[in-house]
Image (cartoon, rainbow, N blue to C red):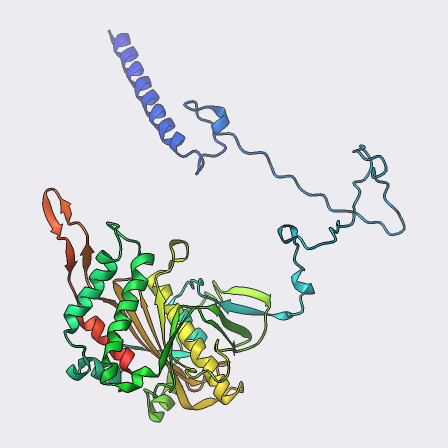
Length: 433
C-alpha cells in the first residue's frame, strides 16, 4: 500500500515538472529574437534558436618595403596562394550623380582640426532647457515679463469679439479645413497658426506700427560662439520668423542686467554639455541672419515653431530647448551684425521672442541678449523668460468619445482657455504699443 502511494506521488510530481517545463518553453519561445538567441528549447525548432554566422574579420594588407606581391591579375581568375590584385579606381570620364564619391573630410577646403558642435532644427538635447541655458549662458525666469502681462490684461488691446473669433479659428483648423475624423498635427497646426496671426493683424487699425512687419518661412540662419574651450554653432533652416523694421525694446533695466553677474549657472555634471550635438570638422565660422543687407525688416521679432513630423517630433522639454537656441542664435546674429564679433557687454540688449505649439498647447519664450562674452561662466548673463504648457483648448472632437454607452467627451470644441490667446496677442503687440 505504501509503495502504491509512493508511485502515485512520484507520478504527480513528474507531471507537475513537465507542465512547468512546457509553460517555461512557451515563455521562452516568445523571447526569440530578444533575449533567447542562441538557446535551445525542445518546443521549437533549432533553426529559430541558432546563432547567426560570425562576421568575417578583414585581414589587413601587408606591405613589405622592397618586395612586390605576386597577384593573379594576369590570369584573370582567382588562384590560391596568390595575392589579391589592387586596381586603381575606374574613372568614367563624365559626372555620374548616382555613382559619385565625395572627398574625405580631410581633403575638403573647410576642414579644421578643432571640432565644432552644431545645433540644428532636428537636434534633441538630453538635458533640455538646462542644457540650452548653459550653452547660451542664460538665467531662467519663470513667467512672462511684466510688460507683456500688462498688454495681455489690458482690454483695449483685445480684438472685437475675441473669444468667438478664436473659437472659429480653432474649428476652422480642426473641423472645417479637412474631411478626416482625426486630422494629423502636421495638417491643422499651420492652419491654426495662420488663422491666429491673421486675427492678430486685425488690430493694425489701432496700432499702425504693426504694418512694418514681415513673415519669412524656412529662412537660413547661422551663428557661432565660443563656450569654454569648445566652438558651438546654430545653423540651418528654421520655422517661421516674424521680423520688424524696429527692434524690440529692452525688458530688463541696466541694474537688473548687472545683478545677473551674481547668478550661478546650473550644471548637469557628469553629463557633458555637448551631448546630442552634431560634431563636425567641416564648417565655416560665419554669422548670417538669413537676409541680405538693406532688407527693410532686419530685426527678428518672434520665431514660430510648429509640431514636426513624427520621425523628428520632439518632447516638450526638448522643444523648449530648441526655442531658446534659435531665439539666441537670431539675437546673436543681429548683435554681431550691429556691434561686431568682438565679445562685449551690449549697450542696447537684443530681445527676441519665440512661440511653439502642437495645435493645442503653447510654449512662450522671451530672450534678452545682454552680452556676447560667452566663453566663461562669470560676468553678466543673458535672460530667458519662460511660460510653458498653456492649453488653448481641451478637446476638439469630430465625433463624441463614448465609453460603455456614456459620452465622456462631446463632439465639438470643449475647454477653451481665453488667457492663452491673450498672451499670444500680447507677444504679437509687443514693440508696437
